Length: 73
Image (cartoon, rainbow, N blue to C red; front, top):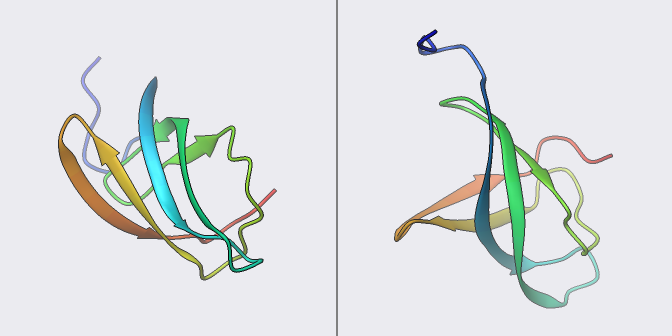
């Protein structure tokens, strides 16, 4: 089944993330991204304290992007 533009894709891919955590500490880390769509992804394994509204950088396969944290569990 091919996913449409608004459907989540059920895969898990390794990505690098970086930024400044809620405590003001700069971090870089490898995590897994899953439940991918054009607007969102769930990042598993983040070891740093992030809060809603934080900006993080992401890198996958040489491509870089920035994303805003919208939900923290």
